[in-house]
Length: 247
Ligand code: NAP
Image 1 (cartoon, rainbow, N blue to C red):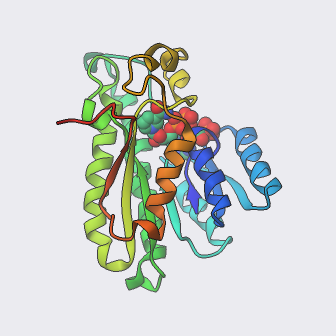
Image 2 (spheres, rainbow, N blue to C red):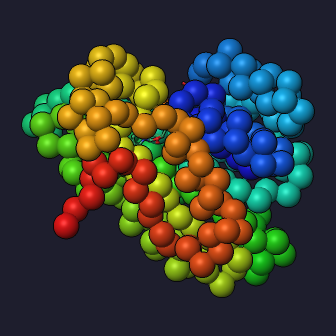
């Protein structure tokens, strides 16, 4: 199992749970080697198998190297397209081309590139044994994030469409493609976007009066990646504590 952005947050929880389920896990990270090594050490202490691999998913050559490293662990069964970034709160009128290019490169192009490499390895039409791809969308895809981060929300809207389209494209190749749409989850991503207090500020206004945990999202990801979800390809599962349920 490859978990992009597996060093922290939802990705780290998914890597731990994946290892517990018996997968040898590639814990991908972009910069924080210490965090990735800590996840690997924790998995190994629990008797699992994992390896940390640095690669920026927005850079094609690094994605190729990530998958080559994964090939050394055995047959690829699951890709979790989890790596994602946010930028500071800004109106669309204040967004530079540089900002937009970077967020789409990581959140959208990165997911396409990783899925491309996964499909090449998993497709039964190419000699593979099938597999599962789980993408990380966001409740923001439905809410739009107007007034804060429309760019981020739009990358996640693209992930929803990508999920449905790729699911149809590879349905006959033994590959399931699904996504989860988390709501507000307790991770570092809020601090990365310049809002370290966001979870605390918003928690009481959420339907469940609390944010979600990375483990709650990881459980949904592992379910969608498993055979328990054998007829769910194309599905996008809200894990938002009812935050983004539209009528
Ligand atoms: P996080 O705590 O900020 O962790 C991000 C992870 O992605 C880190 O492991 C980071 O690696 C890695 N990463 C960042 N840029 C990368 C790149 N270019 N290439 C490879 N890895 C990269 O994030 P999170 O909150 O767990 O979010 C995970 C996913 O869930 C994202 O797609 C996010 O959009 C989505 N999501 C999160 C929430 C939420 O409330 N937390 C809600 C909805 C959706 P380093 O450690 O090396 O920096």
